[in-house]
Length: 443
Image (cartoon, rainbow, N blue to C red; front, side, top):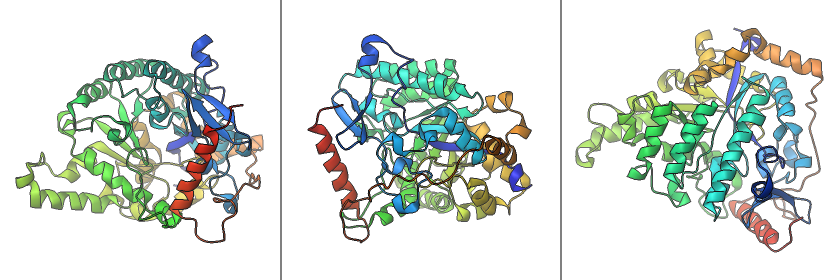
């Protein structure tokens, strides 16, 4: 296989939700009360919904910017590449990057549904969440059938509504839903509570995949407010193990042997040791802990139920046999700061070229097709049109511009002395902007 012959499906990208996302889905009072993208007196975007305000962009959308402008900028849509929020421009950015298909999480208001979970009027939030799901399917995914994996969000604060939405989404064409990996941070019972029994049954009945995205429930810890932010960022993938260990102990994994869980943006290099440690802990402690793992090892259950997704992980790919070649999928993470756009094929090829052609196909697209039940990919697309070479040929013919988009954005902490930016700097800035937005009128 050659670089140009790879077919790349990214199972973790993001959408900077556009201000028009509810316009075609709602009308009247429902549209008037839907989340609104506002602009503060400094020209920064924020979302407003049911009396709450949420910052919009930051490191979530620095794709195509010079490294020296990385930080908590940009903060408004006009500073971004159009592909961050416009589906037609996104297809161009996918093509120039050799990406055949993509699964897109939200960025601000739809990321694990937190905006709707925090809303005081839950009946209204349910209707707006359903509209967001409909927009995602009808106006984003179906704008280019076969190029996007539909991904739904759920009103898990109401289990009856959650089950109904799972079945509604399944009929619509969704095969994947996302949820917070640790719902206790949303004030809900833990995943081990009977509250979730109807959820897992509905997932099994509809053959849905559950996607758990890094950072939603168990954020990467930092030692102190003086800890340089780079240390925090470095440990983010490692912190995923906390949530995975919790889910691996789920009783429903034994009850529903076909359940599929994707660990989005979690990387893979840590997985072999995690499985080894889980097996060791079970061997030494299963008697007194009354473990569910008596005959079956945790590592066996892990390989049966969990898909591990990576952005850039050479170590993990060198140990693919220990992770499981059927349990790994690629993700681009566009437009976040980790994305290697527009050079994904070059970076990825250098990491996978030692593998067999069959293994390369698995980690680049066939595992994704199977785990996310993405049967429509080849229904709508010819294989020869979806290779890296074919995608880039389309982008070249259209003259897609990949030059850096600079807006002279502010540094992570305005006016700070040149020193490592700390976790405290970022937390203080978040609080400052939140307080500032809360005291000024919306435009």
